[in-house]
Length: 246
Ligand SMILES: Nc1ncnc2c1ncn2[C@@H]1O[C@H](COP(=O)(O)OP(=O)(O)OP(=O)(O)O)[C@@H](O)[C@H]1O
Ligand SMILES: [Mg+2]
Image (cartoon, rainbow, N blue to C red; front, side, top):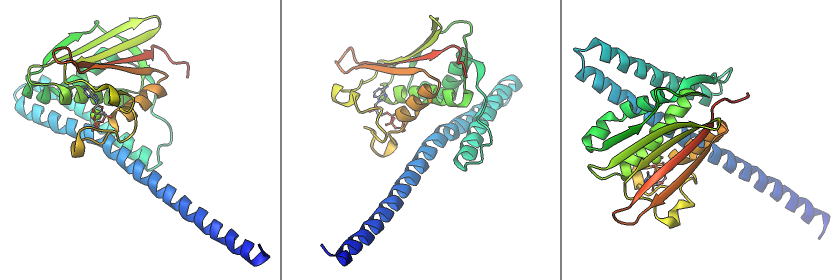
């Protein structure tokens, strides 16, 4: 191969590398846009539910106040997501001790309308309170994602079960449903980005993002599921250290 051919090949390679780089940048930007849309979908839905609840209970100032407080949390989440996305977040939001029982109750209240509409039976096994360090908005997002997945899988009159426990320096959160379950061939895929069985209705990012958040809290998320008729259902187990060192 002569020198001209080599330099020709080199410039072609440089062009190809550059276009590959641009394609990668576009793919990353596209992925980021999808993740952002997924993250704002729940708080927006929650705000819709909370506004509805506040209007329904307009005669009871105490209830309206509590819905507005929750709406305020959702607005804070939205504002955090947007500032983070724009890269303007000057410091990370603080990690602070939060009461997980209150957080779980808040996630349930957000989806109260869907729970009632499906006549889902809610079984709660929660202690008085359980404090652990976490990013409030992110953890609310995780519990909310799990509740939505369970509600999607549950038939009318199904059971949604929530349990919180403290054991050996860890917080254990269990969210279980007796819905249709996950076929074993899908179990290995559900944490993959974009894996969904819900067609247009699902983005397939809920579990990916939730796993990400749990791991950011140095926790683990495990799943067990069964599709056998009469015994079907899914259990999600989240473990978090009660206190993080950083
Ligand atoms: N509790 C559950 N019961 C049955 N299937 C579930 C449950 N949780 C998750 N899945 C399965 O895992 C898939 C991935 O869930 P994931 O939350 O990541 O995405 P999604 O719910 O499809 O969409 P979205 O991005 O809106 O959350 C679901 O499409 C569903 O097939
Ligand atoms: Mg989901």
